[in-house]
Image 1 (cartoon, rainbow, N blue to C red):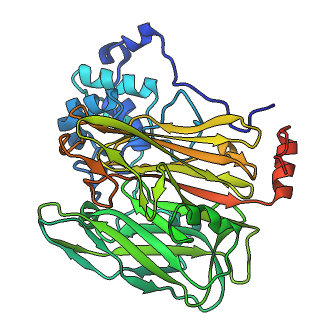
Image 2 (image 1 turned 90 degrees about the vertical axis):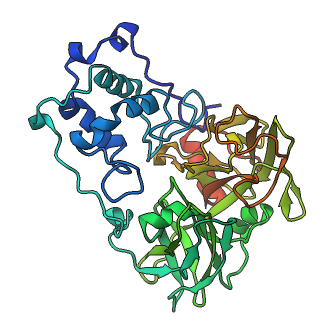
Image 3 (image 1 turned 30 degrees about the vertical axis):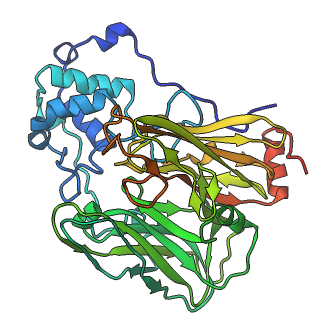
Length: 441
């Protein structure tokens, strides 16, 4: 049977001789070579006005950090992209990882003394959006409306806080959402907001698309989740989420102290389909657990100085397309795997994050032609690995027994996955086009 998933592409292999060329031999300079790499993969986060500790837009700004940049790039800790490149889907809309060739260029540049080169060789500067501009506006224009959470003041020191206010949405007629974006209102706010979830509360008939989140023990509708490393959700063409009059957002803001008092709020921007237009497909942000459940809690039990593995499964009740994979764990989290077990028993690896970093809740958004299409009856299996030993550099205390909890020092394990529900007829048509055996009815 032809695979329903894209061909796996391993990393680009460079010949050993090419890797040994120095910057002096190849003429690598900041102006001619490195600035272009930074523009493509780094400057979106590392420009003036962002939360990053430095800008990399100019030679004067980047040069003092050259050795640190080399170390972060060679070890692939920057840019943050933790997908294993040897298995699973490898085509992403937002791939910010560096190729082996780009890494070699930066390494050789630093090893040669980080030469500036001729400023005339610099690429044209990019006008990055300010902190007051919406990322999605580049694609869809300005949002139809923006709502804010009430502000919260986080003291300089103290326990984690979960702020759960309610905001009414300005909806007077049923309207369909085509994109959403969440952000703390200031760069300082990004330092204290671990994550922000906008739960959608409204009177809407239950349908099959609510089944995944319900099975995960969460409210059946989530408008969006934000964490460092994620910006927005833009739904596939002809798909969306329904808002009805009286709809409201119940916020869940997880806040933590960072050594200084900060007051901020979170903003939600919404882009709507034209009034009266109803998309064909409904989209849901699902919470796929990597753990078994006991009542309302996940079962996680990690003794001191040990490692652990947990897994959870979710059965799809109708055909779906998956848009992304976003692992979520805390400080002991090390890796997460998403697999599809098809109705005929075939198992496919979809995505594997083999070097999870708590500081970057990266959302891996599949390219449209790489989105997996799954039949009804498919089991999605999420497996999580945890390291509660001294080998884990993020571990605050390997001598503590760790269980499930919402605090950063506790643990959890789930994947945020946007699912677009399609009909059986749509799936059968897709399967025929791809010469696949249709799902078992």
